[in-house]
Amino acid sequence: MTRNLIPQILSRVKRTIHRHQMILPSEQLGVAVSGGIDSVVLLDILASLKEELHISLLVLHLNHGIRGEEAERDQKFVQDLSKRYALPSLNKKVDVPSYMGETSLSLQEAARELRYRFFEEAMETQNLDKVAVGQSADDQAETVLMRFIKGGGTRGLKGIPYVREERYIRPLLDVWREELQGYAQQRGLAFVEDSSNLKTTYLRNQIRHELLPYLRKYNPNIKERLLQLAQILGEDDLYLEVLAQELAKEIVKRNNEEVFIPISQLLSLPSTLQVRVLQRAFAHISAGKILEYPHLKGILRMAQEGGGSKRMPLPGGLWAIRVYDTLTLRKGEGTKEERLKEIALQVPGRTTLKDIGMGIEATIYEVRTSPRPDPQEAYLDYNRLIFPLRVRSYLPGDRFIPFGMKGRKKIKEFFTDLKIPHEQRKNIPLVISGADICWVAGWRIDERFKIGKGTKKTLKLTMIRL
Image (cartoon, rainbow, N blue to C red; front, side, top):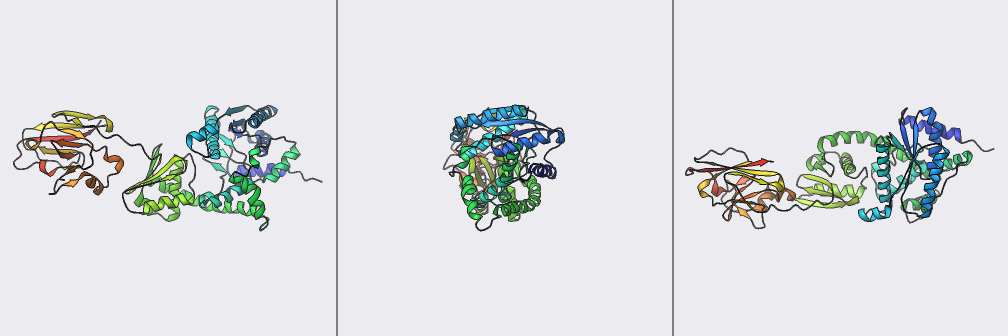
């Protein structure tokens, strides 16, 4: 007599939901349904538990525009399925191959990015609290093995999280695919087959159809051991992640396009926390993706090496850039900023430098004025200057005599000594008198134009923010 799997699986899924606090009463859930067996069983289980959990459901289906008629078949199947359960649905079609060409992502990466973008849009427009995804224990075992092959660290080897960002839940992560097949059979559930799941051109499919069956010869319980490994590492990683989160709050500065990390503070941490801080920084600008171990080691190696500026490419068109003591992770290498075009300085008056959001205020004093120690101000001997004064960015070969020194110094070497990043150098105005630089604005005047005992008239220049 065939054992009834349905009560056992329902009970296990409820325990998973409760243990990981996946669902709260009165929440509205989106259920990602591709039409395959995992997502169909997920929908059936949540529909069965809907009243008990006091939740409402919305079926979500994305046609990736990859498999032609087969994809259209899947979309219609899911629409019919929604009607059968008397549930509302939201369907969308995207063009993954075109997006793949625009972004230089792999087919699977492009599909995943558009899929989660669809989920985010659905949560916003349909007032959903969470989206449930139908990944199983087999997916977890395959993910752990795949990340091991690709060189993942502890964070990667802990596998798929039960709950991500408090928005994505995976109630089936403790149920094996074989059990889902038995559940579907006993419940009389129909589903569709995705032909791409049989193609061994994808690494996951190679692991599923070739590597895992081979490894079972050495350990029949290899999938269970991989799942156990993910759980053990997940518990260890959770503790370390809490520490890394607090440290990242202290040392990582960020905006939508970049994150900035002081290298000296990063390297003062234990190595296991260094990589976690980097992972958190990378996740911020990559929509939650993780870096593989070789990339993490490459970034740390670049941070540990001396020198001025260095950079290395990262997955997804992102870059790691070291400029002296600052490590920057950003989208793209960074745009090349135009140099400040040479313009005349209004004396007296205000000169606006729109390109950098700054200005220079010029004031004339008919007496010798005592300079204040403020790098944003310059006090120059008026009678030593050749008018009109001009303002521009530095050019190759520019030299001046820094205040307090005797010999000429290249502007480039001056910037290097002060560890001014290359990206900022073009935005530092130089005030020119005749053929000489009289002020590197915000940094240093030229020794030849300083206020002295013989000064009878003073020109004061002040950098101002617009």
